[in-house]
Length: 124
Image (cartoon, rainbow, N blue to C red; front, side, top):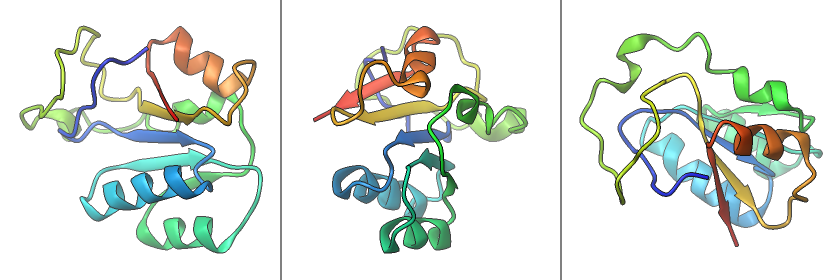
């Protein structure tokens, strides 16, 4: 599990991006020009707004969604990190930081994949 948030250009992925809290965070990050993707099971005015802001939305919650940024350029993470706490994982820029609401079940395959790679941050 992540113990920090990195705003240096690493991508963010939101599981349940259509929720009020998750969508607000995702929108702020898109306005900061950070790469954002997310998954939700429903199309709504909230997810449409996020798409218009530049977020990539998946309409299913699958482990493969986390591979969206695999083709990110190596320079995407070259700026100095502005971390909240020390970050101990590798510097692979293609793995997104995954933000997940507590509304998402822990058996969700997308969440489990993020946990496996040590990339999940669970927010209430």
